[in-house]
Image (cartoon, rainbow, N blue to C red; front, side):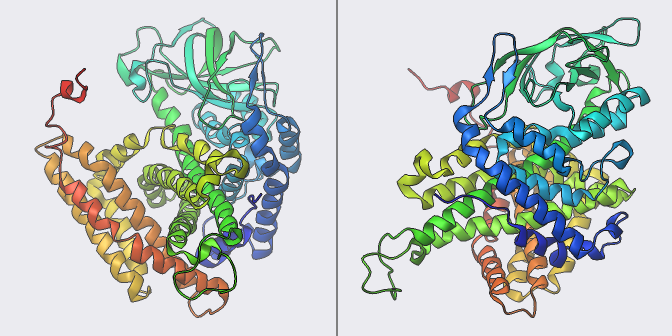
Length: 579
């Protein structure tokens, strides 16, 4: 059976040759030289390949178990692997040095996110929220809360959750009912029920820090009346807080992650930030989580590609339509068939281009942390794209690689069907992809009169000056399609508000397509003048993207320009089938 190993050579190529992290002037990057970057990337890769990857099928088969007292047991090996993670220190690599982290650039932390998500995504769900949770507490918490909780979470001694969703209120958080009553001593009694809480209860750490959205008495209706609270599983005096896991969700995938229904029965919590400003504080964590979910899309694609490419090389099936490698053989490898190669190249073109995009964006996050407002604006613009386009393509990639296996891809033995199931949630959680698309079109596109979108387009255009014609020409066409689509959508929305919703998804896909194509321009430039096998492969994959993916921009533009009239034409009751 084939599996996964960390793609360290690909990562180092992107970091050193494409993005030039060791030459960057971003503050903090002066600690990076090629030897350090290589040692860190290879060390993280070994940990994920050797420690986490073997747990993936175990996690899927066993899942988590809730006991009668509300406690939860994670799959075999998780506790030992988590202890190794803490001992290794990889979890603190990019964490804030003021609170015990190593303070290295976020771009290296993003590499570790990809590797953990590929190796064992169910395990990654536990430490995966730490960066967003600690950033939220640091930004919105009192000095006492920061000093009490942040160092423990960063070190891994404790873990954290984000408790947003309620059964009747998914994306529309303004409908939530959980309440927080002041106790008069600075604390609050939190009462309510939250669902879909990843890592809400587990046996990896003694304490779990829950960040909970709730309403204060007499709070304004809707999202303007939401506040954010910190409610630990274990209180500072060592007693158990009045909260617990009522059930574990039975899910399609990510079985190793304890997705809990959490009840808060007058649980003690403390306010984070200002009253009724909880949504703004929570978005610090949600935006970090959305970028992390986009990385999950990359991880799913890479893992599935590795399994499928190895299988296709070994599997003998059918005969080549042209010249056969071995005319005497009963059958040839799957790689003689153009359509199998199409499937593999589609996924490889996405994965390698998207890896460059998420690492480039991580560098912008590092720059933004040091006060670069333009970098921060670019991150804001690309966040919904990375989340939505990345998870759409990650799931599609897993399905495509399942197809390479034929019937063997539908059974558990080969492992690829698990990737399909695990990948599906990425399109749903941390804001469904339709919501991300609407955020891009309705908020990010028009922000500052569209200046950020125009600056993004100008950056893409600038890099096309050095690109070969076979890539630059279709890229310029795709860029023109994205500009025309944006103009058409905004013009239609002036008279029909539904036009934004109707065109937003195709527009998001357009920006995703252009963004990945932009990275391919950088990749091709990085191998210019080289003629080794690695460089030749990059040019082949880039040309595949140019010839077979970039033409999609025309269809996406047409979908945007179609507007909302026909989508909204059918009365609601006509969507129901007649008996």
